[in-house]
Length: 456
Image (cartoon, rainbow, N blue to C red):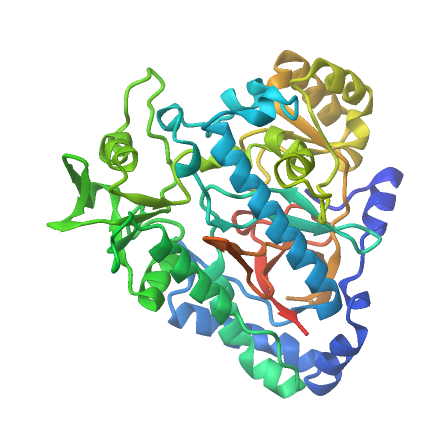
């Protein structure tokens, strides 16, 4: 969304936290030792490097910025602990949502939220502990006071780890020139390998692991190929897989673990029967002959109405206070929460429960009167399809633009990998930036790009 023109919108944008405040000495070293003009001149080199390496989202080249985001280790430590805690709680929720539903019985969240979630998978009902999401990639924003908040959870099939590695490799010469040494990313890659191997059925010591994608034209085909290269995996599209009894096969070889990275994970068709993917996976998963990383049905944890209850889930499942807060939100399918929100739509952010990438989002402080009226009508017509959140002006970061280095709004996608009892947070993440001045939607599909994130 373009820069606001109303006084309320201008105040909202002016509240944004300046990322340079979080590590002033490191940013000073970067700009003094490398230089602003040299950083701006890196744009062409990085574009060529990404192009030569085939780093792209489908046909769109991966745009990596030359100015890394820097987070002080003192800030990163508590954030990483909060991410670990949240991943444990959401995986406990997934097991419970497809099992006993203890949280529903205890009043933590209504059954309605689970059953009307777009990515709830009826074919997995009763599977309980068999449903998990070892790879999580939540979206974080930084509030005006510098606090990191979780804007959305991504447990279904978060992408970006291989792109982060590509960005790190591209910016390596700048780290050397600036005399800075960001924490390494290799532990997260090793953790992903351990999570994939650890998902194998009992008794399988050297599992055959396949990444299931949507073929060479898929948006994240580069990532699938790169992870396969690094970890010794096989990449296959769904049509290349077949089932024999309760075994999944790729060619004539049994698949022990499937890392599910397809756009549509549904096993159950709208009429209640199995989809082609369901015909392949449901029986092997239920028989225990196939381990599935980020199980079908794990996307229920991404539902934005579920997100509203995430902090309560941490207290319920772990018996702990949340270390990392969510952006405050409301489930508009609840009449009481709806009544609180309707008079405030011009102050809040309204989102459809199941969309992603910024689609369908109305940012109240930046919206026109006509846009507020339209979203109010949509909410009143189908309140269960919507949630609302308090607005957070995304923090700003110096970014290379055609006009030189300018501030752009950014978010952060960290990567959290669960392998058994061990939870590993990649040291950094992809900091995604909006393409234009004042824009608050950070998404590659909207013309944005990404930054490496250095922990120092």
